[in-house]
Length: 276
Image (cartoon, rainbow, N blue to C red; front, top):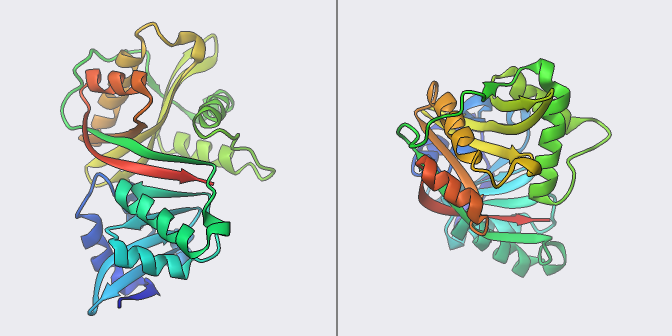
């Protein structure tokens, strides 16, 4: 039976080796490890490693989201035993690993884990590593902090539509998050009459790869064919710094899937999200 323990700085090479096995699927965690290392004091949460015969074979990011990396059934069962009581908002990751962790946790403590708010078990992971196949819309700009109020409003609308709850709290954590994207130059938008009507974010970067998220177009502007050139412009902007652009999209979101395919994305894998 394998061993579970919290990872430390001495484990960084082994962690990076595992992340490099599936760089597209693992970009979110790789981005955080690249920026902050693996220890709680800098990362903000523990990474739980699973060891077999002295070798790190998988690990789990144990934070606001649970995110298993390279985890087979034995590792998932071991993580579930360690995490009997729920203290996360969601489980995310490669489909088989995220769903496997959810099932192992529900089997360990159904009261805590067995009744999620929603299961999105077929989310397409897509990649584009060449120029977009659609002419980019020149109206897309890098959003700056002077647009914070309007960009934050658009971000709240996007999040509420996507997740089903508004990301608002008394400390203003989500607004701080949005401001950090603007300050890093990781936010793109189109304005009309002083309001942001289209937005997209770079949510993670690792090496030559970036992940785009938070894509939103004002409802009144949908259905008119604008999303494709807007998304092509986001890709072109990203590729000025990151040649490979990835994103994930719910399989049932047919308009978005069609848009990404036309722009030039292709599906490379599948992920899942279990929301509590």
